[in-house]
Length: 286
Image (cartoon, rainbow, N blue to C red; front, side):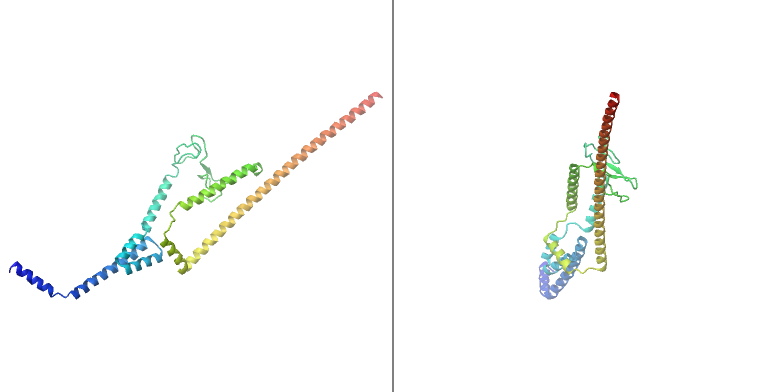
């Protein structure tokens, strides 16, 4: 059998093939393949976001637009998975914890080592000792991280002038602004138009579960309790300030009255001496 004859027989056999059946098989294989692609998109979007609206939209986009939908999904999906974000954040926190005390003295710029309580160069106080648990913690903390006791040095309020109080209020304001800015930029909170729209529709159509309602109620109660505690602390501080001012005024009035009494006593003694001297002179003349 020659090569030419073999080629002719092959071409004749190709002509007898049922191309409709072949196309059906290819279409079936494509459908099966695309089902697996859609399942992969659903699982992949779940690993990158907990937003149900985003996951459903991604699946519908891939189903309707096929290859173009898959390309669109690959372009708009989050860059990192939730697990990758978790581990990267955990690593960042660990590094921050390890290098927390490896800084410079805020007063003189001396390079500090872990465990320093005072700067060895300028004797600047870096940590304070808690009065409750007697452990050292950062002096900039408002509360002790070990027992929760408030970190506030007792200052005689009567010794604080108006200028000093204004400086303290200005420093507290700067500290609050810095804290808000740090918390606002600590994690990336920027979202695209798609995710903003998804969050908006999710808030509208999402039905809260009993667990979510209980959690929301608990958070509201904690916030309310914190606000009440802050108000109570402010009220106590205002009362202490008022008492200190009254005490200072009372002491001042007492000192003024005592000085006035001493002056009166001195003037009375002088008058008595003058009268006694006059009487002595009269008696001597007689």
